[in-house]
Amino acid sequence: MKEENTRSIKLVQLRCPQCGLTPWTFGPDIIYYCADCNKGYELRGETLRDVEVEFRQNPGKVQGAKGNLPFWVFEARLNLMLRETTSAMSSMLSEFTNMLISKSGSFSRKTDTIFYVPAFDLPMSDLASLGRRLTVHQPLLEEHSPGEFEKVVLHSDDAVKVADYIFLSTEIEKPDTVVRLKYTLDLKHPRLFIINFQ
Image 1: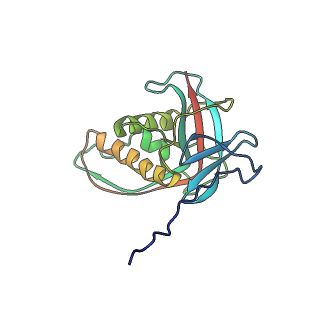
Image 2: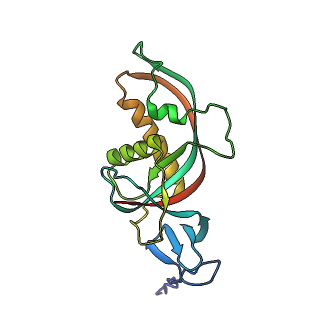
Image 3: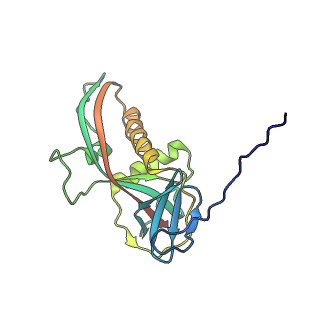
């Protein structure tokens, strides 16, 4: 007896939930941006989830960055509970770590510490370096008109894991040897910045 395969593929055209028009897509599969109502969406399974997308311009030059590049940005706070090393210089924290350490112990409405996670295709070593550089230097970004950008390859949840890697890679690169490290890295309010680099 022959069994018939009743499975079928259904194609659904994505439409902006706000205006009903078909969104632009410059990074298919993850981020969709509607040019008509200036709204961004992150595709999670079969659901479009709102995401803030801001187009910015970096006034200076950054080595290894050119064009319109997507970054997940978070309000960040590091709680460093324990850091034991083999060196007597264990109290010397990196500039990057100091940027993230909570001074007040809680988030405030305004935060000066923004954590940058590159969301485009990049080797991990370059990704960590660029993320650290922007986080430490906190560039003053100007508004920029919307335009085509590099494909987003990270969901916001994955960017949280990459942020953790960026922090740990900073600790590993220091001259002392860390033998015990206990911390929490709190990342809030994910947004997508499309930053134009000259």
